[in-house]
Length: 315
Image 1 (cartoon, rainbow, N blue to C red):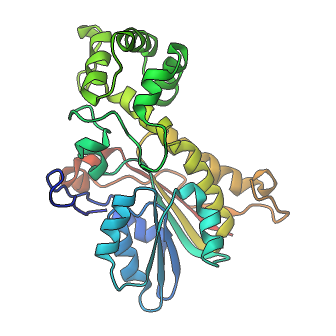
Image 2 (cartoon, rainbow, N blue to C red):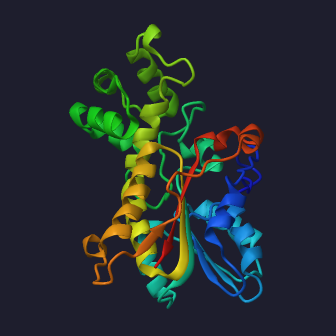
């Protein structure tokens, strides 16, 4: 997903696709195959996959972010790539609309892109002042500002603790509810300052910004990232051909847990899946231990450090 932001907006940034070699090894795709990149971004993984499925192959690129689709369209003009501006949680519907009963492989790369995180007006980052937005799909109505200003304090605390692992969730929620009574919290800088002030200096993390976990939690909920991932994994298991591969790249424990759970369920008993059958196990898990980026890649791209890869083969 190594694209760049349009000229006239924020300075150009380049997203380096993570674990490309490992992703290709586990996907094991070849000429003439149809492969889905369910989070195409700017196309870093997609470009590598496309080279593997030539000649005669077809890539289906999905992304809920219209700006990512625009970058991918520019990159893959004239190539055998179908780009769909939609949530990957709708994978089942997308394949139906494309007339594809099954595909040879599916890649799901979770989390936010560098372009989203470094574009002020998208409101994902506590490091830059921008509108408190965080929507990956800007067609949806609910923003982070809506959650922060409208949810009861108890619900805010639950979100921060459950999705961000924030130990001081209740203190932060109380600070937010007190601050919004004075004036609405509408910018990332306002929210970051409120969160930081709610944590005593000695209790603030040394290696992370004090707002890191809270911002992540809000982003996950605004975009229903775990729900979308769950649906995408279930659909991928259902619609991948026997012998095909499903690969998921995750960056935090909740995403990893969803992926591990989906693969485990499908490897044991297909009757408990959203698309049950009497076939028995649907997949063979290929990563008994998660694959991680090499030390060399982490040195070259520090953002890769939190990545983990899980893969399964359709039976």
